[in-house]
Length: 268
Image (tube, rainbow, N blue to C red; front, side, top):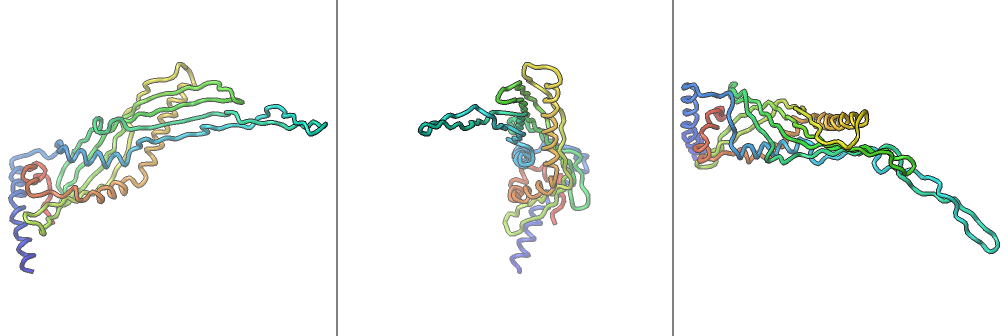
């Protein structure tokens, strides 16, 4: 019991100057609206967001569809008797559609912003926005009785934003000397939206077919984002929970990254 109290007291003594520094900075008018997160934090957010974005997603409709067609007669001789049998073969038929979505170099094109950072009681609240770049591809082919009437394809790039409202509480791990500060982030709300969508390359065709393909490629992306929105908050929080150890800050880390500490609530 004495050892536990001693650890708790040492933890409080070790943490107090850090939070006192935060108070001094606030009194001096330090900006708390937004800041650029450290590189390791950006890598962590990138990994979590990648799990929620459509990466290497492929959708097909009627792709590879065939039809059984008559292919003549097969004549066989049985002694003096001739027998004929119908022959059939499978040929490509119908409208074939294929779509694919890939992330474009997430380590390079992910843009992370933290904004609207504020303190409420024992929590720090803020908004995090991550913009990622995607490549979308679509192909439509029309087959009739084994003959391809046309085949068109389109490539597009899109920027997609994942925006989330986050709250962070903290606690001290007094079992370690010096103590660690543990961040406990939780997503309150989240959404996925298309920032922009640009058609980059289309087959050498024009008119309604091309317009239909380009709009369908975007619709496929929108449908996939709508699917991802379902239970988005729950999935992100589960991902955060799996990485809880990543949010443990050692005393040395706290001293070198004082800008973080200025924005953290007092530990519980």
